[in-house]
Image 1 (tube, rainbow, N blue to C red):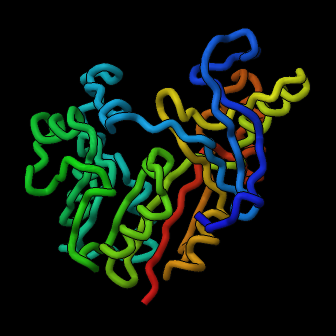
Image 2 (cartoon, one colour; image 1 turned 120 degrees about the vertical axis):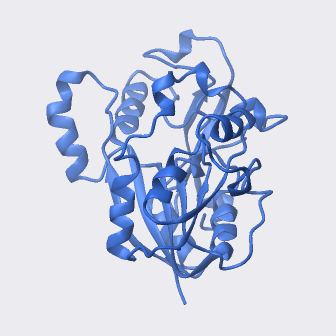
Length: 288
């Protein structure tokens, strides 16, 4: 994200290819090293596991882990982001939007209801097929390919969303740069990613360290959901300095703590007030 040399990287620990629990030393598996960039806070695995095919990661049918109710679209789905966007750049009928990592098309449907002309990219064959067959997404509006292989005209879109996508991509910086080329001047890119400063991971890492273990809770690069990166606000600030955009707004989302529920009463307000929530959400605006 920032182009730092390896001298800026520090090793946080190692990550097992599965659930680690309280004592990962007692588990059998493969580990990879987790590092963090001292310049922009980006957390990543080194080396990174690379599948033979993208479908090895994302080729599972949606029905394998979601019920039929998942295929219904709540009227409030993506409404918070749409309202957030509208406060930064008012939505006008006919504006064009692109959903990168569109899944079965729920966000596309929500954006269409907000008066956008919507297009989507989805690399998973099963998800793409369900988007067309069960969600009635028009085939001419959705491409079954990765963002790396996708092509659109320059300055075509007013809004592009990477909701819960960048952490899965091998080159998040390059993907943002490609999306910027498709974005009109003044257009907005929405991003939601795992935060490098999530309290729960820091707590887990401290517990492992106190037990004399060099494991960390960060990332899941070798098992679902295949998170390859966690991002700091600095990751985008450093990248923005070189690539003709600015951070129009951002906030942290607490989400679940994944710690004993009786602690949530204290931990959730703490995480909210200190920007240590699980997710970092941003609106990036192209200059010009």
